[in-house]
Image (cartoon, rainbow, N blue to C red; front, side, top):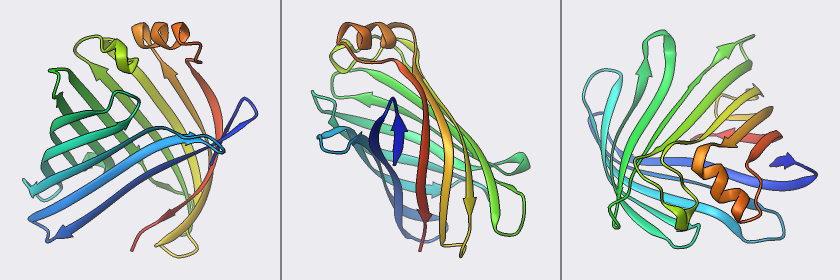
Length: 197
């Protein structure tokens, strides 16, 4: 759950995979919306993932965006892994069925305070090679999200967290949002649960 400007919203970010350490099928999904309203945006990725080293996987497949309208399908090429000093990183390039080229770079770091208490700074940057006004995306660095979460691992597989997040649309993305009467971003308070099995 996320709270911004007195409005309650929800977000999800999930990943599932089937296979071994070398070859696997990975499904990723993320999205957000406001309680009592429809989903604002949602995406699903189906990727073939191949280990290219002890700490990194190369991924290729498709991404489908259900929202915002119009929906889009993208060819996807990316990576995910563990960078030096234990930074989890993920990046991808997306080529849409309309010829639009987008990119995303994400990273986070788990700083253990105790055996169960973990502080996690995180960042996500989204890029576009061109304007995509029908989806509210401007060329260049289109938006950023910075966050800080504090989680308590009741078990490694189950950890509630609280935190703060700051997201901001930039450049033409901000201009497109203002033209539609939407906000360009700001701080929010987050509370949620991290699970894995």
